[in-house]
Length: 593
Figure 1 (cartoon, rainbow, N blue to C red):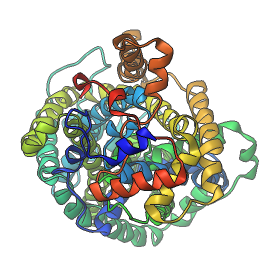
Figure 2: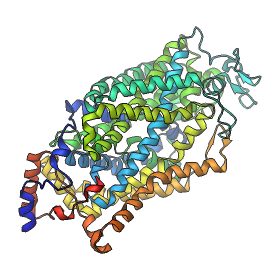
Figure 3: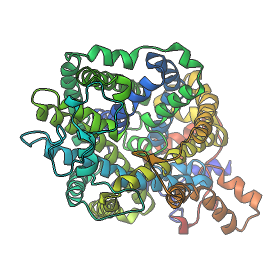
């Protein structure tokens, strides 16, 4: 009873977490539409265009959609919904959310570090379309032929390939991207000099990013109207053009024709789970952070289902756009679709431009394609950068008065860190960090999140929180998904990611031993904070280890940010006889702010 009375009192001035600190100057979405569009822009990215179509074709075509949709329904939507609920309820970002189980706060630090790595290399990926847009204004697109200083004797333009696709040659588009755009070195061992045009493109990308996020969610929400919707206009134009080309039907058939026997292959199910996971983007903290600016009573279930459904639709839609053009490329060159189909940067900056070059007025189609890629990618950077910034401001409240300077400083730091990827070995470095720094770390983070919610805090307590917020208790489906299905699927993804992890290469060039170690260090440098924070708490506290652990497995001020909602929630807890909040004497010390 004493604890319940304490909860009804005004927060003590000495208590570490003050309600006003969580609510003051943090910002809110101007409308629900801005939140949904920003989430769409975050969840729908470059991977929908250059990874999903190839993965679907390689893994059984239409048959791949069966395990993929199962993974989306059983795990993707529940994870997405859970993260929105956590952010919306607590009104905090990816470090503050671990007030739910304070001893796991190191997981929030891990999130921030992973986002830092990703923002750096993803901004370089964004700079490639910026660079390619410049070449779209040439009288003749430079990747169409071999009459340029960068070309080698092995260069062959597509109109001369025909049925000699087994010969030893490189296409003009391949040489253009690697020898002119990247000016790539032999390997990561040879860093080379700075590609100044690439550095300029990176500068332009970061200036645009900084201007768009300068006022936090107020500016990001407004920009999302354009960056989230306009790519669909461009994608539709490319769709209409693509499906009317000769050979398009062959390409689309390669993409969607079901090979049902592939469903017996564990690798196909692993690919479906991994694509679902990284396609939707849970675990990065971006979803939690965006939801933290929501209205407390927002119907997040509808938002989750809507955004995930649009994501799935976009992946299939983009696949048809890509493979219709690849079918045309196969028709014109005589090279089978199976041979021209690639994924990643090779598809976006070599194969697709190669096909576009065979169309009338290729500059126009190329311009639309590269603008679309840039817009698809920039939203992801917005959300990740905002997640980093919000986490910093949540922990150091004083900096909220200087938010614009914080954003400018962060943009400057990340730009400087990314410049090493503008060297001749830049693509090797980018690929290295993309390969190791985030993939497994994000799976670990999501697994910890589900265990935290379902087994430490308690799934029934969490469902009661959702019921208080939305005036409706979640259906039993959500309980089963959060407590059983999601942890099982995430464990499956974790082990298959490790089992099927290939030796890193780029353009058939193997990485040296030291580079692989550096890649694994980028992974360790983030996840190590999870156990380090646990050990830090155990060592710092004067209680016995058992008592200390018990206290820090209980919520620390897990209440809504708004004072009125907070008071209602405390009364709701009393009526439901839910476990009391951690007392002021059990709160974290001031030194851990």
